Amino acid sequence: MKKAKFPIVVLFSFLLSACSSSFVYNNIDWLLYWYVDDYIDLSADQESALDERIASWQSWHRSTELERYQIQLKSLRAKLNSGILTGEQWLSEFDEAQQHLNRFRTKIAPELAGIAQKLSTEQVEGLLTSWHKKIQERQSQFEKRTEKERLTRREKRLTEFVEDNVGKLSQQQNNVIKQYAPTFISISSEQTAYQTRLQDVVRDIFANPDSLEFKQQLTQVIRNPDQFKTSSYQEKLDHNVRLYAHMLAELNRTFTQKQKLKLDAKLEEWINLTEDLISD
Image 1 (cartoon, helix red, strand yellow):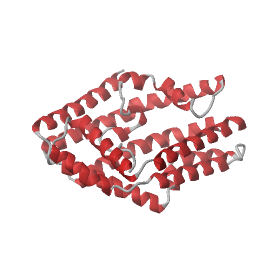
Image 2 (cartoon, one colour):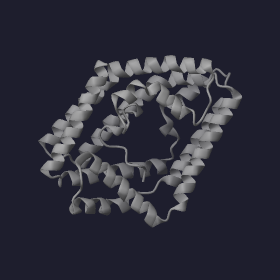
Image 3 (cartoon, helix red, strand yellow):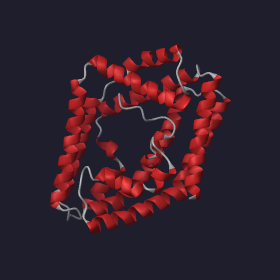
Image 4 (spheres, helix red, strand yellow):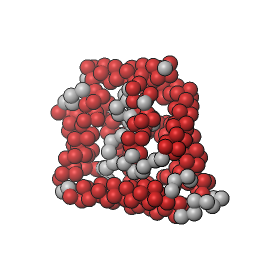
């Protein structure tokens, strides 16, 4: 199963990740460089060009997107205070969160493709080599684990995520997670194949960086990387997301008043965070 990252705020954007804070948001430029540095060394001119784009993206994000996040968070909070969300309602929340990510991709894609077009051959090769290495490392780590170890890790991740939001789980709630965990489909091999295919597509595009089609082709990849997922891989992802939604719905029915209050406080915290970021 893919690492649990669908519910509530996590899918909203990497700009509001699990370690969200105004500090992280307002310093996303150097945090992004820290991440990019694992893949590619940028020249001073390239860093300057990226700085300008990041500032522009963040301004757009602050002025238009954060309010959308806040609206969804307030709506989710009201729904939870009114009753129990069904699996279908959780799926709707996930879909709305995915739309936030899609808008972000659409916004940055053409400008990021323009910056990428200026990378040297050596930089592109370095990027692809680092990317390939990380794909292989992840798959190697997965293959070293036994089925029992994989299931234990899955149960732990699911439990930790829920407890982060509602507090310590009861035995009944732990049993719900233990019941669902084995039914998720492992997608590691399909994920590796997808990443490899995506890498091949990018390599082919960069083979002709001066072509008239380069920017358009790379823009489409950044905007919609999901187009390179096989139908089998997408079906497994959909299966896991639906299971996750129904697991949350079942857990939702067992929350104590104390757990409900903690979840409500967590949502209020995120709502206040978006308000602070909008006002900065």
